Length: 199
Image 1 (cartoon, rainbow, N blue to C red):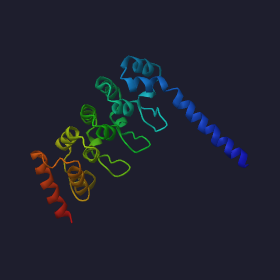
Image 2 (cartoon, rainbow, N blue to C red):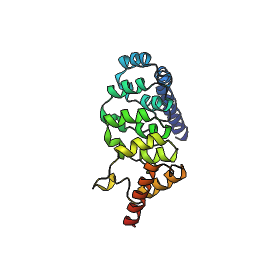
Image 3 (cartoon, rainbow, N blue to C red):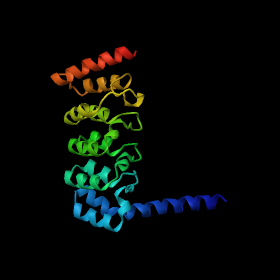
Image 4 (cartoon, helix red, strand yellow):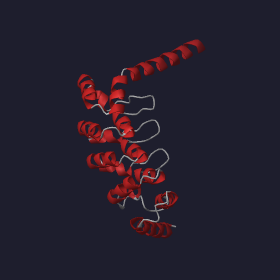
């Protein structure tokens, strides 16, 4: 029985490797920003637009955003995807927007937010919002854009500036040394106020 279980697990692992191997041309196209190659792949396999194409469960959009090679590739792919597909997560819990924030791909952030604004409020595995990811990784332009479109709301999930989320953002902004910027000084003051009110 043990041998059968091991064989079944091995066969499952082999099948998964085979699944990812078939996406190698799409992976290469996304890495290089070669839209024509990707488009041919999508014509043959429309489901590939939203498929996990790496063992880290990245989609072609995750890969294209991380590579930063072609914003046109990202735009064309997002145009082909249904809005809810932009909430797909990789194995690290990152949506396409979180990946864009982590890598400082501001143009990618703008494209994703325009199609799926709710992505602004989807937290990753470590309970971080996209604006936390941008602040934590020192991507000032990305952070500024995310701050301009992320809003407080009455729903508890949509309170990115309230305690404890706001306190974490405040620490990340200071740690990234953005506090000398006049527009961020006001943000820090607002975050401190929100944090103090919530405690």
